[in-house]
Image 1 (cartoon, one colour):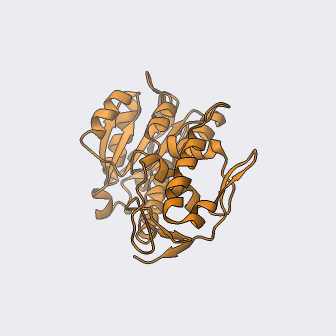
Image 2 (cartoon, rainbow, N blue to C red; image 1 turned 30 degrees about the vertical axis):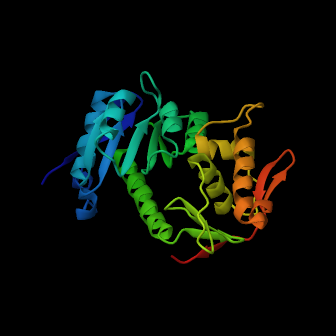
Image 3 (cartoon, helix red, strand yellow; image 1 turned 180 degrees about the horizontal axis):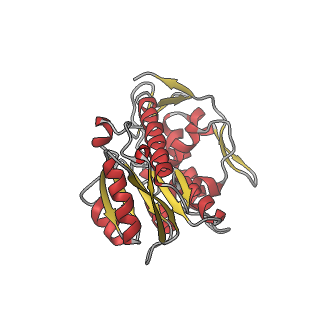
Length: 270
């Protein structure tokens, strides 16, 4: 069929070359990809169009947005399988978007970052992004990373089908966000309290700092006077103690360290 157009993305510029037919749409673009929507948030129209056309040729449905406001509009009507997010956006930047969406959306995020900006990549990953790709990059590398993140998510979905964890006489259903005793008594928790408990049961016998817990549950770092986590843990203990005192005792304070769930955690069937 002749040659295909390929490109390297660098900053706000694109470098287009004529490549051999191996750069044509991949044979890996199958019917499964056709059902997946990619949300592409990129302010540069040339890069946005180039990547949009490329991903469409690879079998994905693409929704494009030039900034955070347009992204919110797309998310109001579509839940994508994955979002590709450029960190250097006008107005609300990519890091702020990551912080705002952390723990609130069911889809993974792949960041596009400027070459050499390690701190942005580190912060982005800590805020919940699933992968990053520094500019300049070849669109085929972005495609490979998208597919890898989606495959990882599919494996995690299978694992989550049995994500019911038990410690002491407490059973935590991570998918249903339900906590109850072995006898079936429901423990009513707020969303924030459940998020704290989920962090503890998913990382048992490991000291979790207040910074980590705040980042994982709220998507922001703690300042020296922030007592959000301490208050949440106190409330969580009281509610657990009402139905299982031993479970409450399992959440231990580590001085100058944070908190640890010292009890043994095991996976239970549905």
